[in-house]
Structure formats: structure tokens, C-alpha cells
Length: 411
Image (cartoon, rainbow, N blue to C red; front, top):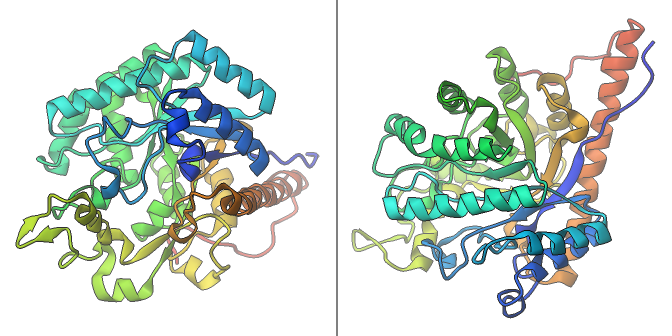
């Protein structure tokens, strides 16, 4: 007889949730102050871990902040080398707060068509790898991206020639690279919608096969975010079932906990590829050079969907069945039922991109993030208890589970 022993995931928060927690005039001359402040903030929020956000400094980036739907945060500032002295300072803050670092995230186009721009991004990623080693972190998180001048098929060749060397460098440092699957439709004012080639299980598998050929299959994993599945009309249970059916349910190694609420009126007007014309990113038949106009390229997405901070969307069973909102409880159940996970060492990272609550005011944002993090923790605990009771305790006593439950490939 199996005892009742539920296993819970590790709950954290991505530090991009509040980019300006430490004012830039403070953190630019003292970059590690931003990490110290975020560790204290995470403890106040009730998060056990932070996913440490890194990015090219605004003075070095090729994409201006005004053109970004969700401006990135360089909480980890790598303009200067992250050396042992800096690592010791961060480690002291980790010990003082009791908060850990789940991984380091850098979300950029690593297949950029311009060789100089691509080299700059890859050099930054390698500096991030070195920082991860000094902080005893075993994974980094980011995108693959897309070469905008090539077809998706040609991008497989780009991945093999340009991205695999990054994975070899990760392997030499004992790191895993976990890919978030956002399609990034607004990355270009052109018609391309799928601008991160690692956007869906079919391409994850194709990319992993390339990685296996070069001995870096174990370095390539997915940091699954259900909001992107909703954006593509998918549901989490079916995605996980597909991975299991194809023998690739080992690929998912962590989670961004972010939802998506589909606007049925936007779908009626534009379909799932979003607004295709009259967005405001083209002026007089040409792409606008103004970053504020380029931001309108994101209407490919925002006309039909809005990101959810977990817990801020209404409970909506019909929307769950129509794949128009994330069914959080089933998300956590399906992960346990269908994926090959070390559950107790799997990270759930709350990512805040709900526009109407994207506040740069600590006092106002604190209770919002506290509520969302508590929601995620309790949903995971509920799923863990259901799984342990149904699939371990009852199964050991040959007592059947009641009812039918949600099924893959059926909505």
C-alpha cells in the first residue's frame, strides 16, 4: 500500500515582472544592487526562487524599448564581467533572503540574419553561461529565434550551423538550455508570424534531432509556457499527450506560468493570425522607422489575445474547453500524468505580462504578485494532492478513479 505523499513543484517569479524595482540611476553604477533588491522583493512576495532576467543594456540593444510589447529587464547586468567577487556578493544575498535562483533568462533572437548582430547576441549569451556557472545554476532559458531572410525550412540549417555551437558551449559548462516557445509574431513588421522556430512540439522534435546528431541532445529542453499554446489554438493536455505519443515527453524541463485570454471578437475579425493590415507599423506603404510605430506590429497578437497573470482571469470552464484560456488545475495534473518530470525539482516561474496590471509601482504591484504567486502555489499543491491520491494511493489499492476527466485531442 502506497502512503499519501504529494510532490510539489518549486514556485518562483521572473524578475522582469518589475523592471524598475531598482531605479536605473542606482543600478547602472552598482549593477548587483538590482539582484539584491529583487531577492528581498521575492521573499516579500512569497516566491521561493527568482528567474534572473538578463538582457543587453538599453544602450547596447538593437531593438529599442519603445518597439517592445514586453520590455525586457537586465536585472543581471553583464556590461562588465560577472566575476567571482560579484558572484560572492549575490551568494550573500541568496543566503540572507533564503531565496534561490532557478535559472537565468535572456530572451532574444539568436538566429538574427545580420552576422554582426547575431555575434553580439551570442557573445552575450556566452557571458550569461559563465555567470550561471559562478552562481551554481544548471540551466539558462531563452528563445531560438528566426532568420527573417530565410524560410522556416532554411532556418533548420541556420539552427544547425549557428545555434548548435551555443549548445556545445553550454554542454562544456554543464548547463541545459531551456527554450521558451513564444512565436514572437510582433518581432517584425513584415508578414512573418512565427519568428521563433521552436514554437510547437513538431519543431521541438525536429530541432532535438539535429541536436542529437551533434551530441547536444541533453542540452536542448523546453521551458513550456501555456499562454503560447492558447495563442496557437492548442491545449496543454494535448500538447503533453503528443509529446508522450511521439516519445518526446522528456523534452519539457521547466515552466513559465503565464496565461492567455482569447478575445472572441478579435478572432471573428481577424482569425488566429491577428491584424494583418492597417496596424500603424507601416506608413505610406513602407515600414515605419519609428519604434513607437513598430510596436503596432504586435497587433498580430494583441487584437485577439491578452496575457493573463495567473489568477487574474475568471474561472471559465467553457473557455478551457474551447482552448481560449488556461485550465491551470488540469495543466498541473497533465504535467504529472504525461511528462517525464522530476516533479520536486521542477520550477514553476510566474511571468507577469498582463498589460493592465503591468505597473512600475512597487506598492501597487506587491499585492497583485503576492496573490498570483499564492494562486500558483496552491493550484500546484491541489494538483499534487489529486495526483498522489488518484494515481498512487488508490492505484496501490486497486480502487478506480471516478469520472472521466479532461481528455487529450478533444475540446
